[in-house]
Image 1 (tube, rainbow, N blue to C red):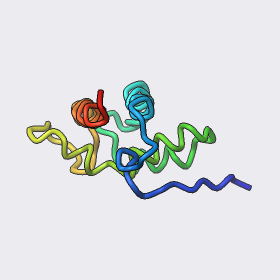
Image 2: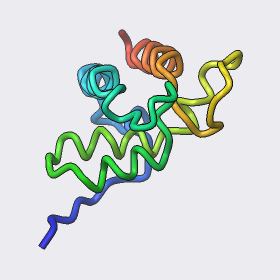
Image 3: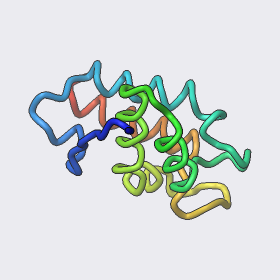
Image 4: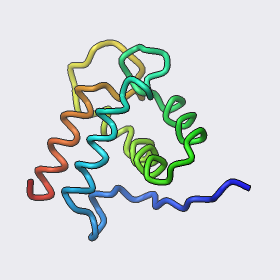
Length: 109
């Protein structure tokens, strides 16, 4: 039987116990895993690719990182306004960099 994981639907940066280190861990995971998550190689991590990765991984920490990306996909993908053509709901490397730079700065970094 698969282990169930309960995730909050609130953004991590809105929670009181969120630290810069938590956000940096998610950022580092997203940067390091970008190519692995971008299965079709189009330069964007799409919702379907994240959902598939969430289903396939057994590592709880990785599941939480992927769930964070899923929960915040719109906010992340909206960070870069003059973006390259791609899926509307896809996350690019530029989106990730802009998003995490802003959120970590807001957390005091």
